[in-house]
Image 1 (tube, one colour):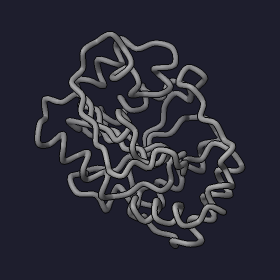
Image 2 (tube, rainbow, N blue to C red):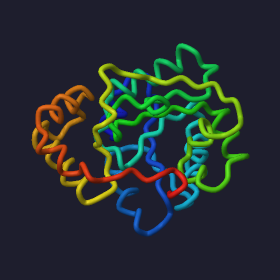
Image 3 (tube, rainbow, N blue to C red):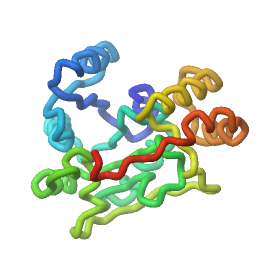
Image 4 (cartoon, one colour):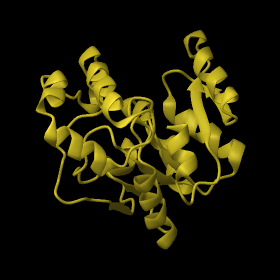
Length: 210
């Protein structure tokens, strides 16, 4: 993901926002080895970690890439950032508002002001999921979604289970250790049902389930 973020246009700083838990020491060490800024905070209050990243960088917006989405595509990051730069009054831009991409190719951008508002007001699972308060609350945030055609939201390339890991290993074995374009991933999975079957039985958890 660091590789994808660095390759995307419009991204000025790359930050690894991990927890202070001893189990995340390796994540912090890898970030330092890769030469990116590392911030560490609460293990459960992930939103507060993003606020730390804002404070450290002084950024006007934050792009959120999650560790369970390892196939991040630089072109999608660039597109989401470009949407916000074209209209900085937007609070939130993402590939997930209307999901047309495979689950696991998620890119989200939250403006500084919107994220600080969420930090001041959000409770419960919204603090774990960072951005969910921006699209799943009674507040009227200005949002815009990125969609692709034909839709491929029936596919899954996120990492939550052993089966997901096996499927992702198969994708990397075919496409190589790089940041592939989203359509390469879709084309591969459409042509290789043996790979999609690996994690076809996995069901996505609901937001409130953590």
